[in-house]
Image (cartoon, rainbow, N blue to C red; front, side, top):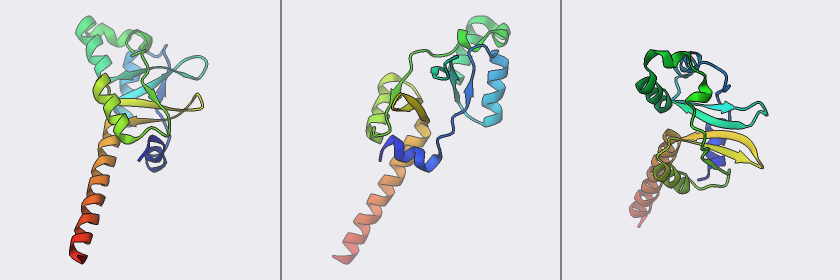
Length: 143
């Protein structure tokens, strides 16, 4: 199973926000879309960062309620973690674990193809394990 296959099942729509958006507006987007992170698009339309619930918590801890009036650019995570559509689900999981992130931007020929979350990866791993167990069960029953 690859990142591209995950995107073909879940879709490639990505919720985006702008660096100049205020954190209050960005938080509403996360709430309204029921998501944990949004990709921040730069003026060139390319990913410039990711804004997540963790980024919000850090800003509120550092600046209190005034943080909500600050721009997303002051809070977003800039070190993008990316992978290609042919990246295997096990590699995605390892990247998430090693880098302590929950979202990986999938780039295809330099363009954003989608966003894969830890939930997507876990869901796929569970489906694969269940399919393997069912295959083994069928094999044992026919032997």
